[in-house]
Length: 484
Image (cartoon, rainbow, N blue to C red; front, side, top):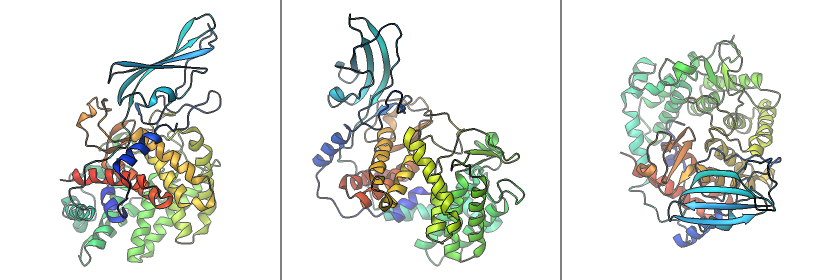
């Protein structure tokens, strides 16, 4: 679960530009050509293999293999059995970690059993690697068109939201109604999104007399319930409230990526109302980030509110924090946050950019060890930041493209894959094309689709390749077509 109202922001914010002249055939060919670009392949002793927990691949993969002390192989035999056509596809190579180039375009879409065997000079054989994976379909339109316009979908959604009892309750009580909306157990995220939603409603339905009142009351609630000034995490809004969902397990913790979301929301409300208390609430959050920043440039991902100490040694991938601080620096000229923002950026460049450990950071899932719960959010957020700052370094566009390829490879499905999701249900029920959230929630999620749409639109805007626009449209249509 990510931003609560992300679908509305797609339809409100994203322009999908004029129709491309390229044909579906051109896009299919380009999608197939893209799949022959390996994504950060592992190099034994030099570059880690990130894909041991991956279920599917569009881009040609390579895998870490097991060493044997009994024989010294001089060549390796790769054998891939396709469950789609019941055929074997094989080749030999000098190493046991080669990308599957010789057979990748021959393998049909479907489940694959791969076996890699090491062979020595006299023909002795040992099993170096075996694994199952799913070869996923590459981008190849046509896909279903949206049943109606993005704007119509947005307006329908906003009207629905505005008329819900769990929204109206703010006007009368100034408090969240947990019975009406149990997701209020994640106040920083969900209440912050209610504020953003009411600001959006006011933009498209101006003159109403309640949406801004609701936004202000929700913001005032977050400020009132924030950590006290005597706390190590002073002024941070609460990640959890009550005992619903994951709040019962993690209720005494703050997820360090979350307050940055709320800080941006406070700034949005300040822009609309000009009430300085919301600007001050945002800068108070930023100041607490500075106070808790590690010398490495990042933060621990989970902090115990009572002790001020980390609940886990897992570190935060500080995309949200960088985005928040960059708004303060670039829009509001709060230059005191520049150094902190730059340190956080360097940490990302020196860590997940090198290791490709893009571990998901979600309020309803505990901190995960390396590569066990990868997600598309962290790399796509960073890709968009790189594209926005491409003038600073010529390598940023290349890296952004690699991060988008990784996210599409692991988390976008253009056709229903023949796999089981994390709930042991077959994926043939999925509405596609779609985007999946994380390994621990390997399911289509509307906010995950939205994240990829935003990313592809940014790529089209900056890079100009029409395939990014086409991918954005295909995914956005799914969101429209799933709307009730």
